[in-house]
Amino acid sequence: MADPVAWTVVERGWAVLASDGSEVGKVDQVLGDPEADIFDGLAVGAATVLDRPLYVPSEQVGAIEEGTVHLTIDADAYRRSAPYEAPPPGERFLAP
Image (cartoon, rainbow, N blue to C red):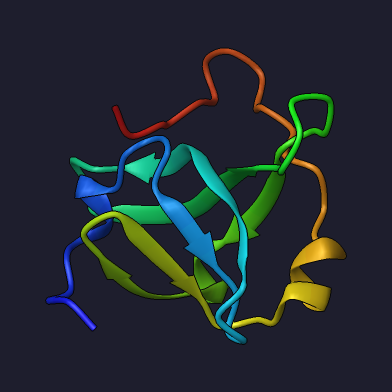
């Protein structure tokens, strides 16, 4: 495993791996407030363009390394995650 990195460097398109090692998607958005160092979670894009991204709370994010985010849940639990719903304007705090 590569050296860990902070959540603030995660970029769109990074691979997201379930705890069983299977790739479940790609980072679509990083959700949080980098100035306050508050990591809320990730919107993870599905395998196909037609599927909606799923929301993964920060509590289910494990190790983060350059280009890859590891989840603490397996692929089945990931598939049961709620769809990502963008907060209303004014309530957003998204990492760039």
